[in-house]
Image 1 (cartoon, rainbow over the protein chains, first blue to last red):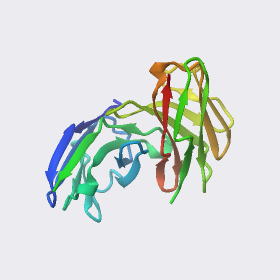
Image 2 (cartoon, one colour):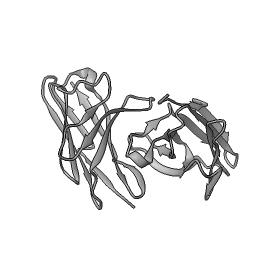
Image 3 (cartoon, one colour):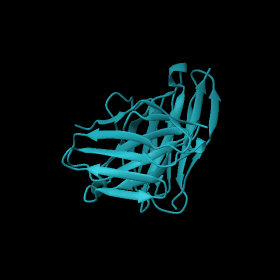
Image 4 (cartoon, rainbow over the protein chains, first blue to last red):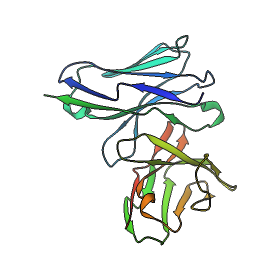
Length: 113
Length: 113
């Protein structure tokens, strides 16, 4: 119930291409779905987040698509750049109760020139 | 945005000694902080939830006597790894919730030799 699934485990994308990472969850009580970007040796940094009452959220080159009925959400990185190479984690939490953040297993993204 | 400061960033200690890691919310108060552990190429695993003025809540399988958590003020939580052993070597990350969402520290790389 508390698990967040994420795929693919690793992803190689050409510079300028679109990177797509997919996640799924089971617990319908989750009401906050953030995406984090982590570089080696650093803590995760919030990239973008969405609430379940919104189907899509876009910030710059990053877009979250959310499908509440399917309990799935995805991150799209448009015009991917080598600087986007990092590990990406989807996550979920019950924000209204200050509950813990449950992380997906992560996706290692490599953007090649 | 909200900032969480974590110190030290790296620490090497001898087996059998104790190590303290500090996590501070710099510009906001955090009644709840979270401690995570991350092994290489793996996701963040929640160890415990730190509550200001009360006992921490530990996740299943985490030894509370080994990983001592103290949340003495609204801006400071500490994690002490007691009687450290090489298998405790890992990347420890703290997090606090602010109006910006969940903010993470930069992590502490613990190496036990």
